[in-house]
Amino acid sequence: MPAEVMRRPGGFQPVIQFSIHADNKVGRLNEIIGLLSVHEVHIIALSVLDTTDSSIIRIIVDYPIEAQKLLIEHQFSYVQSELIAVELTSEEQIKTVTCALVQAEINIHYIYPFLVRPHGRYGLAISLEDNELAAETLTRSQLTVIGQDDIAR
Image 1 (spheres, rainbow, N blue to C red):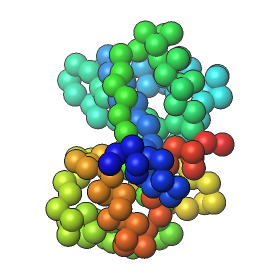
Image 2: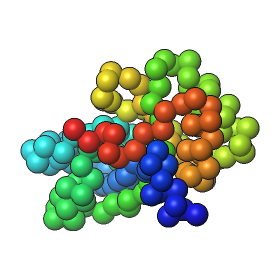
Image 3: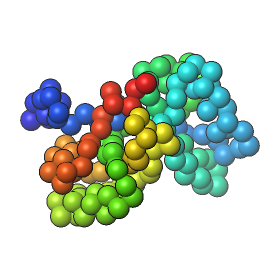
């Protein structure tokens, strides 16, 4: 079933997230942002989780293959994962997102906003238990689920 959903036009299409493990030291985030910027890889969404010894820098970029090459080349430790992204026309739709996911009994691991989005609309990156079911649920709730191709420039 997952392969069928991926191939079906309008079916679930994940957004790629990089969770970069970085030393908790001054300038590390700036170094990563600068590296991507110099190579014209644009950060679409950003979240930083800080701990005493290290940080997890979560990013979604417009061109994940290029970002992956850069992270490997510069020896950044990271984990790549697939997320759901949903486009919102107003902040009121956040409630629609959370209500739809609760009704389908889908657990949200974490959520963070997009920094930029084509067409000037809001966007949310959402880490969930079941991306395919969530995509179907959100679409049935009249929400626009967007994929990696939708955020490429």
